[in-house]
Image (cartoon, rainbow, N blue to C red; front, side):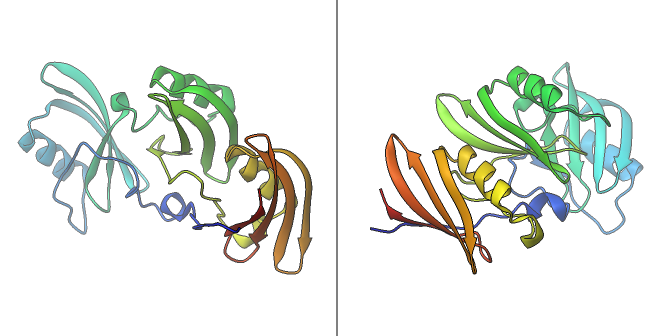
Length: 216
């Protein structure tokens, strides 16, 4: 029996798109969105005290209030989508973000059983639990915005990073254990591991990142 899992890339962060994360609303985007325009749009949506609006790359960082409560927002400068740091959609970014800081911030957002917290490029990757369900998180190291890719997908940002160590790390975050062999043979990675206590024989396509389970 063989199964195949779809490739999922982290291009949504590397390209500046935040489409995979849930948003609390949207302002009307326009080609040259500036601070004054963002502030005006937020006031029209019912936000108050929009006193601090800063642009960092393609993201606007906003401090405001809504229904008498302070809110810390991130707005995608390309799509106009609004993300609220207090709703599990983002953590507070800082220049020297570390694994311990990411873990602490995600715990404060209600995530538990955090493991495999590591940084690859501008994205932190985390395996965690939320509401009793396993989740694979991606945290943008620059903006703090959280994305939740589909579970069971092998995330391959670039082919140059498709190494034995990377494949091993990714499989560990998918719940595989006792990975005794990771070897590249031509265009495939040959992997022997265990999942749910049972031995499995895997093949990972080095070009697409697709996983085939040959036994288990």
